[in-house]
Image 1 (cartoon, chains in turn blue, cyan):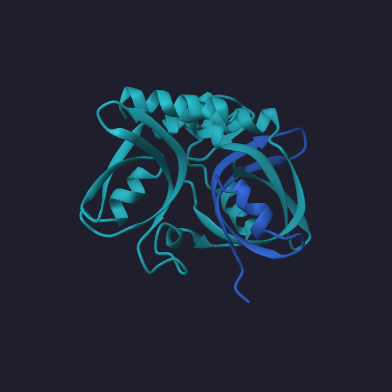
Image 2 (cartoon, chains in turn cyan, orange):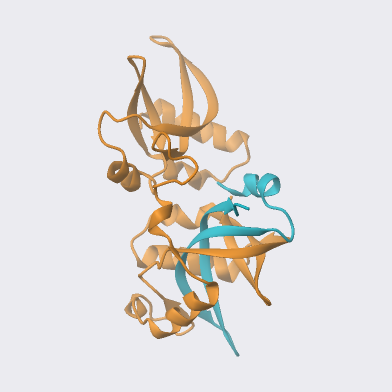
Amino acid sequence: MIIPRTDRDMKKGVPVDLYLVRLGGMKTDEKIEWIFLVEEFRKVKQ
Amino acid sequence: MGESRLNYLKLWLSSMEKKPEFVDLYNQEMLFTEDGTEYWLPVQTQVMPHFKKEIGEGAPVDLYIIRLGGHHLPSKDWDWMFIVEEFRKPGTEQEGIFPWNDFEPRTLQQLIDLSLKDNSGSSLTKNPKYLFRDNLMSSKVRLTYTGESRALKDDRRKFINDWAEAVGADPAYGVLYERELLFRENTASTGFQLQR
């Protein structure tokens, strides 16, 4: 349940470290849409 | 989890307009002690294996919990309901040894390139439009948030649910992901599914 924290801790245009897992991809007509799930995020230390 | 606590959780989910399937995420409780007092706390099913791996029996732990409220029991006064969202070994809040060190630093483009070469999980589905992968390739990627978000599209939600079913994960797994946020890596933009 990290969505509520994104408003507080994620700012537009600011780098962020995402911790994600790869499920796979969906083929569309011209490309593959890869599906990644974000498990957690951290603000980048300056 | 006992029936009365389960019913309370269902009632809370309903009153908060949460999806009833969430109850499946909290069908297990773990016993904790604080100053000699014992507490049974519901823990997300997907968190439990990591917990058992990282926190030894009798070892201190920091819990990140949500308070739902309490219900009155004739025999026990108030039974307070808390659910465990996350945990850390004490003293590791900054660096975090669990579970984030399992996530290998990569760029997203590297991950996609690896995913094209890696054929693991292809036998998990007969859907010709799906490229399932059973190695999660847990990764840490550094991106820039664009400030944009959207509701998770139906076809992508179905993909997550189908994947969870194919790998034997909790069928309620997909319920956790309702929105996507848009990030940018160099010049490319990619949508990601974030837990509610």
